[in-house]
Image (cartoon, rainbow, N blue to C red; front, side):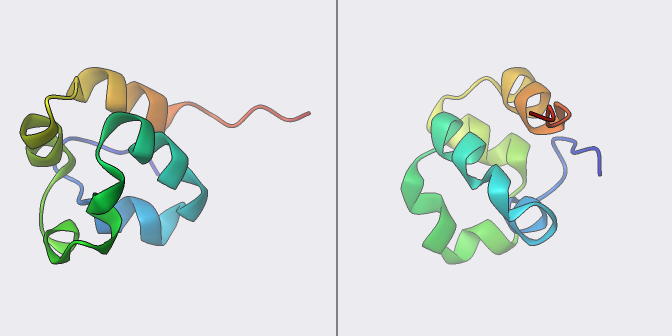
Length: 67
């Protein structure tokens, strides 16, 4: 799945739970238990936390490298 600024935090966690670490790097760790994570978009969350939404999306959309 390719993420955009219009996806919610819940979208990311439901589809790719392992991406929680990336979200934590860019957003406050408290986002995951927050009821707003169900409806707040990545763009909105980045704005609230002073994060660079383009960098957040780039990191979320990177393909996982095989070891």
